[in-house]
Length: 571
Image 1: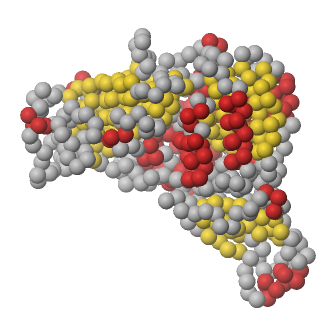
Image 2: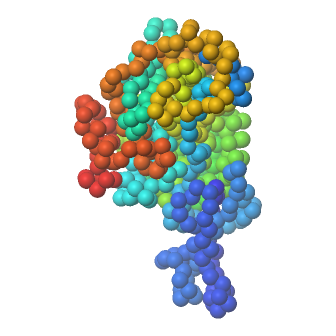
Image 3: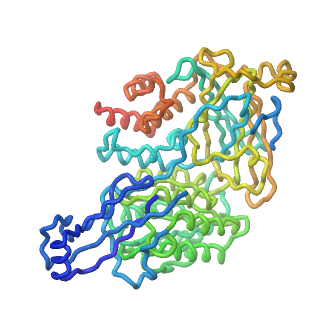
């Protein structure tokens, strides 16, 4: 993992000449972690120092420092074995301004999920995730002309590709929190396997019927935000949200750069011009003191806390923290300390070049929040207007899913994506373990690649599990799996449990529209990340399969087709 900061210093002609004469280069490229390129280049105000720079020209020294990122109930039988040394002491110590190193975006992803043998590991446990940032960020790359080989594999999170889109999922029954939709059919990238679709959704709400809201816009106005696709786009995005607020809502605005400023405190949502004027007054300059901004935003949100209402901080940034706490682990601990305040967090990512996806993913994951990437006004409208209820109104906390597979039906399984959301099996029943939050109208989809018992490439065990599992085989002979969902009502400490058995009725001769499109999104993610499990998946194959799906006037799915065509050189 890497942390970057820029320090502006003027070097005298003598100093620069001495450096050049002694052979001391002004470029110190370093690589490491999950950064997509190189940093640490010494840059002149007019370009990169090559050794013959005018000695009277101010020189920007850009340096990179590195740091290290270093028993449940079962139905189908018993389980067997189950720093920154160079950071300045204060913002005042240097003249901070933004001078990006090329391709300094950073990402963080655990190793790809592999297959688990059901007899040895029947339980698959993970935290729900409604984030969509990965898909929108990769879309930006494709739109900007990135080739397949130039897209960082760690930027691709398959579950965020799948969950970016809407599916025709069952609504919750009366009195229920979730509606479940399941089906299984042939796996399109491996004909020897099956693909299991597990979808859940919450009830949509009429946002006009929501409770009062207490919103704090926490806005990064550091020098790195001084680009058209950052602060200007951010301001327009927040204006779209504001246009849908009412007098029941309260809006505060906190900004951070070298210091922290409260620009607006508790304005009525109906006072749109006051909020617009505050947004229009923002200018980008200086360093990035995100720690102080986070502290102040939560302080304001807690001081105006509305019992039974919506209390949320909305952080908008490129994630390039460089003053105060900037280590992802330290920021994670800071945001975790705010989690029990009852204030939720939404993270909106902007920009490119120095984009810190790893930082923002940590903040949203451990701050009871959600994470989206805003690359256009259309995306801002989707996240902040069309899906306002899902983004702002939390209806279920600490949502965990656990699927127990029946070894009499399933030889092995693999969860597609969710690598950064995996949990221990014992975490499922532990109400102290944090998990994801789900908003009103949100949906979560998980895909499992399944090797059935008796399949051609079944993984055989010499010393197979006997005893209890074999004794119960007849009772559960037609069951593939048991899906369990554990969640908490907002503000509650005790969880509730939902269960659904998946029997042979889920097996379809031909995949339905939900499974067919979700599998295309998964294939796209696997091709982009060059997954070892991609099988026969190709861009051309995705394009051909898309033509057989009726996506109607879904502009986002139609855009998906365009992106695949563009990346394959056919657009």
